[in-house]
Image (cartoon, rainbow, N blue to C red; front, side):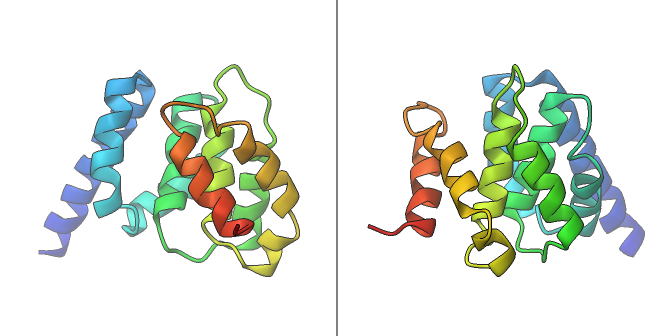
Length: 146
């Protein structure tokens, strides 16, 4: 039975990786629909931790999104890698946004509080974005309630 679960998990992860490589609006709609049910799966978490620095921006985005949607504990190395990704200046800005979200989702962890101004600055860049503006506002309000 355990092998079947692992096999199903691997199939889901493979499907989401393929969608992230496509990196289209439609593929991200499918990812956003599927990910909440599997973000806490150990195979997803291990993959995400290892791919925050992937050359493919879609895969960096997926990695940060998995960590955002999960409730796993982040070790210092994960936080550092997310911080580096958040501060990345790339043609595709969404991986840095999702890294900021992954960090903000762990607020008020003292390690996150130490960089909350950086997180807020990145999130503020996306307030007017039609696809993720509401997400940015949610996390801004979590860090700086009105």
